[in-house]
Length: 214
Image (cartoon, rainbow, N blue to C red; front, side, top):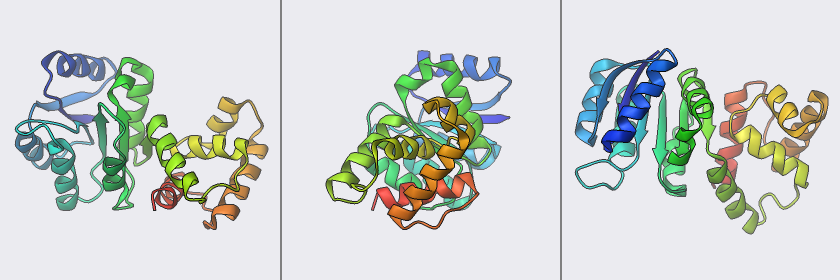
C-alpha cells in the first residue's frame, strides 16, 4: 500500500513513517507543508494519504484544503486526516462529497498502533473512519436539536460504532450482543431516522453521518 504522509512535526512524522513501514506500507512521500502535500498527492497517486490538518505556512487548515483539492482533481482519493482537536467543520467538509474513503482521527489515536493502522487500511479500502470523539460531538449537536431523541441508549451505541465504520460482526463483538440483535437495532435506527437501509457498510455510515451533521 503506497502512502503519502503530511506532518510538520519531525519526530511525529518519523514515528508515523516507521509505524507504517513496519506494517507493510510504502511511504512514497513524507512532506511538512500544504503545497508540497498537494504536489505529492497528484504526482505520486498514492493508495491513501495520512494528513495533518494544520500545516505550514499558516497552520490553519492547509492539510485539509490540499486534500480536498486533490480529491477534486482525483475523485475518490483516500484521505485519513489527523487533527489535534475535534473540529466539526473539518468533519463536515470531509463528508460533504459523500464519496467515502475518508477518515478523521484525533492525533492521540496514533499512539494506539493497531487502531491507527486499521484506520489507514479501512480508508484505503474505501471505508469511512470517524474518531469516536467526533461522533460524540455530532451526536450531541444533533440530539440538542431533537434529531435523534427517539433512539434508545443501545441504539446510540450501535449508531456510534456504525459511524466508525464497524461491521455488524464488529459491533456485536464490541457490545457483547448477537449479530441478529445488531441487525434489529440498525433496522430500528434507520426507521427512526427515516434513512433507507443499505447492505453497503460505507453507504450506511455516510448516510447516518450526513443526517447527523445537518
